[in-house]
Length: 186
Image 1 (cartoon, rainbow, N blue to C red):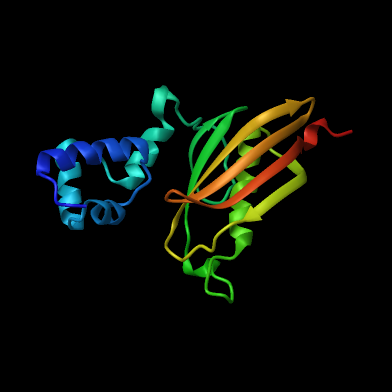
Image 2 (image 1 turned 60 degrees about the horizontal axis):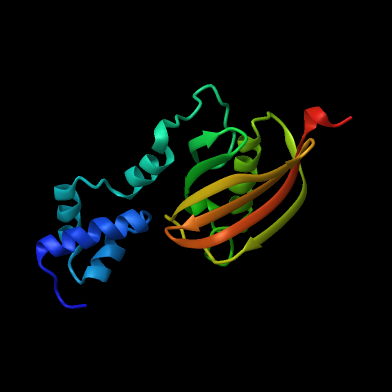
Protein backbone atom coordinates (compact mmCIF):
# COMPACT_ATOMS: atom_id res chain seq x y z
CA UNK A 1 0.00 0.00 0.00
CA UNK A 2 1.51 3.33 -1.01
CA UNK A 3 1.65 6.12 1.54
CA UNK A 4 -1.56 8.07 1.87
CA UNK A 5 -1.90 11.72 2.72
CA UNK A 6 -2.77 12.33 6.34
CA UNK A 7 -6.36 13.39 5.63
CA UNK A 8 -7.07 10.38 3.40
CA UNK A 9 -5.44 7.99 5.89
CA UNK A 10 -7.56 9.38 8.70
CA UNK A 11 -10.75 8.95 6.64
CA UNK A 12 -9.82 5.35 5.85
CA UNK A 13 -8.80 4.75 9.47
CA UNK A 14 -12.18 5.93 10.74
CA UNK A 15 -13.98 3.76 8.18
CA UNK A 16 -11.84 0.69 8.97
CA UNK A 17 -12.47 1.02 12.72
CA UNK A 18 -16.16 1.53 12.07
CA UNK A 19 -16.25 -1.80 10.22
CA UNK A 20 -13.77 -3.70 12.43
CA UNK A 21 -13.55 -2.01 15.85
CA UNK A 22 -11.40 -4.74 17.47
CA UNK A 23 -8.22 -3.89 15.52
CA UNK A 24 -5.19 -2.90 17.58
CA UNK A 25 -3.00 0.11 16.87
CA UNK A 26 -0.23 -2.27 15.77
CA UNK A 27 -2.51 -3.96 13.21
CA UNK A 28 -3.65 -0.57 11.90
CA UNK A 29 -0.04 0.63 11.64
CA UNK A 30 0.82 -2.43 9.54
CA UNK A 31 -2.23 -1.95 7.35
CA UNK A 32 -1.47 1.73 6.64
CA UNK A 33 2.33 1.27 6.56
CA UNK A 34 2.92 3.88 9.26
CA UNK A 35 4.20 3.80 12.82
CA UNK A 36 2.07 2.97 15.86
CA UNK A 37 2.52 6.53 17.26
CA UNK A 38 1.16 7.90 13.95
CA UNK A 39 -1.96 5.76 14.33
CA UNK A 40 -2.36 6.90 17.93
CA UNK A 41 -2.08 10.55 16.88
CA UNK A 42 -4.60 9.99 14.08
CA UNK A 43 -7.02 8.37 16.54
CA UNK A 44 -6.59 11.24 19.00
CA UNK A 45 -7.22 13.85 16.29
CA UNK A 46 -10.34 11.97 15.17
CA UNK A 47 -11.54 11.44 18.74
CA UNK A 48 -11.39 7.63 18.37
CA UNK A 49 -10.63 5.94 21.70
CA UNK A 50 -8.22 3.04 22.31
CA UNK A 51 -9.30 -0.58 21.77
CA UNK A 52 -10.67 -1.26 25.27
CA UNK A 53 -12.76 1.92 25.23
CA UNK A 54 -14.10 1.10 21.73
CA UNK A 55 -15.24 -2.28 23.03
CA UNK A 56 -16.95 -0.64 26.01
CA UNK A 57 -18.63 1.90 23.73
CA UNK A 58 -19.98 -0.86 21.50
CA UNK A 59 -21.28 -2.73 24.52
CA UNK A 60 -23.19 0.24 25.86
CA UNK A 61 -24.48 1.37 22.46
CA UNK A 62 -28.19 2.29 22.32
CA UNK A 63 -28.05 3.42 25.97
CA UNK A 64 -28.07 -0.15 27.32
CA UNK A 65 -26.51 -0.12 30.76
CA UNK A 66 -25.05 -3.02 32.68
CA UNK A 67 -27.42 -4.00 35.47
CA UNK A 68 -25.32 -3.06 38.50
CA UNK A 69 -27.39 -5.28 40.78
CA UNK A 70 -26.45 -8.34 38.72
CA UNK A 71 -24.07 -10.65 40.56
CA UNK A 72 -21.43 -11.98 38.16
CA UNK A 73 -19.23 -14.84 39.37
CA UNK A 74 -17.70 -15.37 35.99
CA UNK A 75 -14.29 -15.35 34.45
CA UNK A 76 -13.43 -11.96 33.01
CA UNK A 77 -15.06 -8.58 33.37
CA UNK A 78 -18.76 -8.29 32.53
CA UNK A 79 -19.13 -5.41 30.08
CA UNK A 80 -22.76 -5.58 29.01
CA UNK A 81 -25.80 -7.74 29.59
CA UNK A 82 -29.29 -7.63 28.18
CA UNK A 83 -30.91 -10.35 30.26
CA UNK A 84 -32.66 -12.93 28.11
CA UNK A 85 -30.86 -11.81 24.96
CA UNK A 86 -27.09 -11.31 25.00
CA UNK A 87 -24.08 -10.53 27.17
CA UNK A 88 -20.47 -9.45 26.64
CA UNK A 89 -17.33 -9.93 28.75
CA UNK A 90 -13.59 -9.33 28.47
CA UNK A 91 -10.89 -11.49 30.05
CA UNK A 92 -7.18 -10.71 30.02
CA UNK A 93 -5.14 -13.91 30.04
CA UNK A 94 -2.42 -14.22 32.67
CA UNK A 95 0.63 -16.40 33.31
CA UNK A 96 -1.22 -18.52 35.88
CA UNK A 97 -3.62 -19.71 33.12
CA UNK A 98 -0.85 -21.31 31.04
CA UNK A 99 -0.71 -25.10 30.59
CA UNK A 100 2.33 -27.27 29.77
CA UNK A 101 2.15 -26.33 26.09
CA UNK A 102 2.84 -22.66 26.89
CA UNK A 103 -0.65 -21.52 25.83
CA UNK A 104 -3.74 -20.68 27.85
CA UNK A 105 -5.44 -23.82 29.16
CA UNK A 106 -8.80 -24.25 27.34
CA UNK A 107 -10.58 -24.75 30.67
CA UNK A 108 -10.40 -20.97 31.21
CA UNK A 109 -12.08 -20.33 27.86
CA UNK A 110 -14.80 -22.82 28.77
CA UNK A 111 -15.22 -21.15 32.18
CA UNK A 112 -15.63 -17.72 30.56
CA UNK A 113 -18.17 -19.11 28.07
CA UNK A 114 -20.15 -21.07 30.67
CA UNK A 115 -20.33 -18.25 33.20
CA UNK A 116 -21.41 -15.75 30.54
CA UNK A 117 -24.11 -18.17 29.31
CA UNK A 118 -25.51 -18.43 32.86
CA UNK A 119 -25.43 -14.66 33.22
CA UNK A 120 -27.37 -14.01 30.02
CA UNK A 121 -30.10 -16.37 31.29
CA UNK A 122 -30.51 -14.15 34.35
CA UNK A 123 -30.67 -17.02 36.85
CA UNK A 124 -28.43 -17.70 39.83
CA UNK A 125 -27.81 -21.40 39.10
CA UNK A 126 -28.04 -23.22 35.77
CA UNK A 127 -26.75 -26.47 34.38
CA UNK A 128 -25.32 -27.02 30.93
CA UNK A 129 -27.28 -30.12 29.87
CA UNK A 130 -25.58 -30.21 26.47
CA UNK A 131 -22.40 -28.45 25.44
CA UNK A 132 -20.87 -28.51 21.97
CA UNK A 133 -17.54 -26.72 22.26
CA UNK A 134 -14.74 -26.10 19.84
CA UNK A 135 -11.30 -24.78 20.80
CA UNK A 136 -10.27 -23.25 17.47
CA UNK A 137 -6.92 -21.54 18.07
CA UNK A 138 -4.31 -21.41 20.85
CA UNK A 139 -4.26 -18.27 23.00
CA UNK A 140 -1.13 -16.59 24.38
CA UNK A 141 -0.56 -14.85 27.71
CA UNK A 142 -1.56 -11.18 27.81
CA UNK A 143 -4.35 -11.54 25.25
CA UNK A 144 -7.67 -9.75 25.74
CA UNK A 145 -10.46 -12.21 25.02
CA UNK A 146 -13.88 -10.87 24.10
CA UNK A 147 -16.78 -13.24 24.75
CA UNK A 148 -20.30 -12.76 23.46
CA UNK A 149 -23.20 -14.94 24.60
CA UNK A 150 -26.52 -14.89 22.79
CA UNK A 151 -29.74 -16.76 23.50
CA UNK A 152 -30.79 -18.02 20.08
CA UNK A 153 -33.88 -19.94 21.19
CA UNK A 154 -35.86 -20.89 24.24
CA UNK A 155 -38.10 -23.94 24.49
CA UNK A 156 -39.90 -24.07 27.80
CA UNK A 157 -37.28 -24.00 30.56
CA UNK A 158 -34.41 -24.82 28.15
CA UNK A 159 -32.19 -22.06 26.76
CA UNK A 160 -30.14 -22.53 23.57
CA UNK A 161 -27.13 -20.26 23.96
CA UNK A 162 -24.27 -19.64 21.55
CA UNK A 163 -21.03 -18.19 22.87
CA UNK A 164 -18.09 -16.99 20.79
CA UNK A 165 -14.75 -15.88 22.17
CA UNK A 166 -12.50 -13.76 19.98
CA UNK A 167 -8.94 -12.60 20.17
CA UNK A 168 -9.23 -9.24 18.38
CA UNK A 169 -11.11 -10.40 15.25
CA UNK A 170 -10.14 -14.11 15.15
CA UNK A 171 -12.48 -16.59 16.81
CA UNK A 172 -10.52 -18.78 19.24
CA UNK A 173 -13.36 -20.67 20.94
CA UNK A 174 -17.05 -21.29 20.44
CA UNK A 175 -19.69 -23.09 22.46
CA UNK A 176 -23.29 -24.04 21.86
CA UNK A 177 -25.09 -24.80 25.10
CA UNK A 178 -28.51 -26.13 26.02
CA UNK A 179 -28.99 -24.91 29.58
CA UNK A 180 -31.72 -25.09 32.16
CA UNK A 181 -32.19 -23.19 35.38
CA UNK A 182 -31.88 -25.39 38.46
CA UNK A 183 -35.02 -23.65 39.83
CA UNK A 184 -37.17 -25.18 37.05
CA UNK A 185 -35.98 -28.76 37.60
CA UNK A 186 -38.25 -31.03 39.58
